[in-house]
Image (tube, rainbow, N blue to C red; front, side):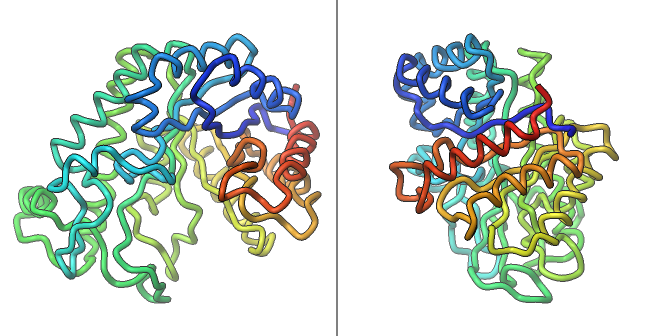
Length: 344
C-alpha cells in the first residue's frame, strides 16, 4: 500500500470552533489532510477566520491545502466570481461567435494581477497551510455537445483581443478561428504560465509550499478530448506549477477499466517527472449501486501506487443540493476505505 495522504474538501469556513468538531470527525474517518475550498467571497469576507481555521486543522494534525475554488470561473467550483461581476471586459470570448463567456480570461493583466494578489495574501497570512490546490483549471467550453472527431464541440475559447494580440506577437500572424496545432500549443502554454507565475510568487513567500495540480480525467488521445488547455498531461506534469500531479473524479457509472486506465496514466505521469500522484473519489451527488464499492476503489488506487487520495466532499455533501442520496453512508464508507489503505 503506497497511500500516504487521505483527505476531503471542506467549505465550513465561518467559525474555527465549529470547524474543530468537523476536523475531529475527519480524523475519525481516517483523513490526515483537508482542502479548504475558498471562494472569492470567503477570501474577501471571512479572511481572519480562514487563518484561524487553517491553524485549527494544523493543531489537530491535518495537512492543510488552500483551494482557490471557482476563482474567476477559471477554476472548477460552484461559487460565483466577484471578479466577473466587477470586470465585464475581461472575459473569455468564443472563437466562432465573439460572444463573451461567464469565465475570466486569465491572460488579461487585470485578472492576473487580481489572482496573484489573492495567492500572495494567502501565502503570507495563512501560515498553517502546507500548499495550494489548483482545482480543475480550464478554458471555458462555449458548446455543450461532444464530437468524436473534435471533442466538446468545435467552438473554443479564448479569442478575446488580449489573446489575439499575444498570439500574433508569438506566431507572427493573426490568431485563427480554427483550433489549429499552433492555437492548441498557445493555449496550453498560457494556461500553465499563470499557474507557474503564481507558484513562483507563493514559493518566494513560503518555499516549502506544495502545489497540487488537478486536471480533468479525460482520454486525451485520438478520440474525444475537451481541449481545456491542460489535456497534455506531460506538459502539466513537468511544469513548475505542479509538485503533485492529480486527476479528478470519475463517475461510478463508468467501467472499472476506465478507472484503471486513468489511474495508471496518472501514476506514470507523476513518476516520469518525479512528482507525487493523487487521485480523487466522488463523495457527493452520485453513489455506486453498492456503497462498499468506494472501499474497493480506494484499494484499487492504493494497489496501483497512488500516494494521495482525496474525495469531494466532507460528509458526502450532506445538507447541500449536491448531496449523495445516502450522503452519510457514503462518508462512512470513505472513512473505511481510507482506513484500509492509509500507511499509518
